[in-house]
Length: 171
Image (cartoon, rainbow, N blue to C red; front, side):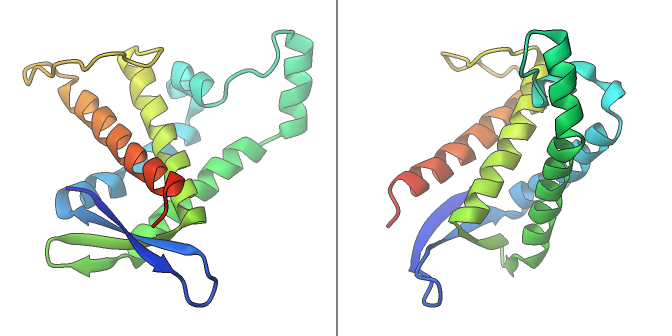
């Protein structure tokens, strides 16, 4: 089970530091997600609904939107690719413990994880046809072929909540 513990202040920077513990299964699942998201970003036409949710329109006017996209160029895509690479690097540098991984996180890396998990959750929710927050828990039917996606969506939401709570109330 994912656990987050405040480790105090980094003696060199004075910034808060946390220890995120992931059991092997969680670490394995999280480690597979950057490649899956990167594959989607590399082939945006493979799932337009998801891409449109990750990169929503800023303007209703088609001309303004086209100009905005032209000005932004590939910066939004590049930013997401950099996030995926940084997540991979953090997972690779994590300390292997007897039953999982331990990542040391500061505020910037927690923000990085939050952005990453939010993107993954948007992809999953769009794929499942969820367009707004669920007000109540959806019971999982183990026979439903989408049950693993629903479970991952819930899990990532729980991890996001843990990180947000820690950032809101460090120490």
